Structures are given as C-alpha cells and as structure tokens.
View (cartoon, rainbow, N blue to C red):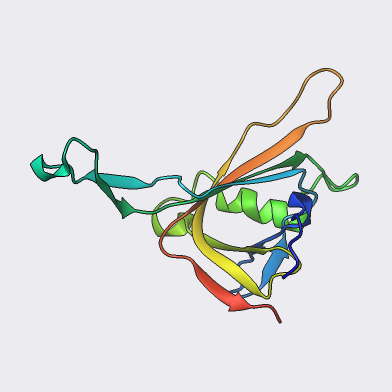
Length: 152
C-alpha cells in the first residue's frame, strides 16, 4: 500500500443551506483545524484494585473544527460569499436552542465518503493590524453522533 501525506489545504468543507441536503462550500479558507477531543468527558474508575495506577473510561466524545481565512466581500453589494454568509447566519444571536443547530460535511478529495456533523456555529475574531487584511474565523462544534454519506 502506498502512503502519502495529506495536504491540509485540500480539505473540502461545506455547510448545509436552508434547503435540506443542499450544500454550500465554505470558501477561501486559509486554515481548518480539528480538535477531536473537544468536549470529551471521562469518569475516574480507579479503585483499590487498581494497584496505584490511574484508570478511566471515556463517557462522552466530542469534536470541533476551527476555520479561518481573510474576510472577502463583494465590491458592489458588500455581501459575504454564500458559504461564509450561511455560517454567519447560523452563528447569529437569534439562533438559540434547536435553531442553533445546523449541519456541515467535510472530506479530502481522495475520500469516498463525507463525514457529516450536526453542529453549532460560533464566529471568531476578525480584523487585523495596520498592514493586514481583515481576518474571518468560525468555530464549529459537533453536537451528537457523526454520520457519513457517499460522495456522489
């Protein structure tokens, strides 16, 4: 079997539009970072029979994805690109409770299935220094179990 390094920049990340199973690319990312241990919880199972060694079991799994890039807006309308606009919409202050949940899917080009998360969205810092372009950032936090779907 041939092994090869995976380019982080090749990841495809999409957010579900307001129409179910309609997906928008989250455009022009400069960084996509996964934390597969986010919100993980463990239970201490150490007892007298543990012979002085700590023991634990995972009780809850979680994950998050941090996305970042430069802020891009249409010269005429000032609108964000469609995928980023959807992320910002889902992170809106009126999106609480069940309304705060959306879906993303992601994969690398060589993968034949999408990984799909039900998730919440939070916007990160934006702006920059005097000689910098304005940044754009979002954190997506998985809620519930992951699912998959074939690439079609």
